[in-house]
Length: 73
Image (cartoon, rainbow, N blue to C red; front, side, top):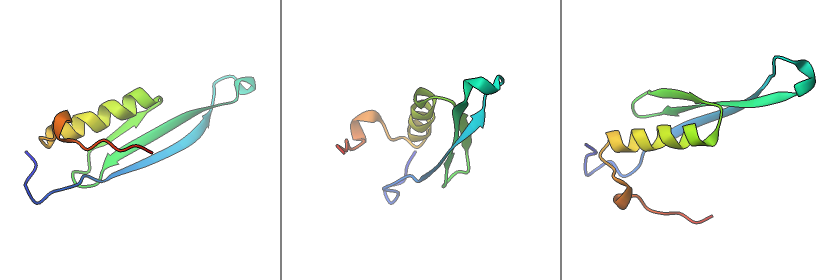
């Protein structure tokens, strides 16, 4: 569970392109995300997997959805 002092979680997200099996199909996006505090790392090929990893990490720390602040860009 997250301590009262811990008010944030940091993630490092890397995104890159890799060539597809068939050269004429161009590239596909790949990525990794790492929880800086725990070192836990995950890989993704789509945004849904990125969001799932982030939610799992926050849940592990006891940060339930109702306690997360919503940001509007």
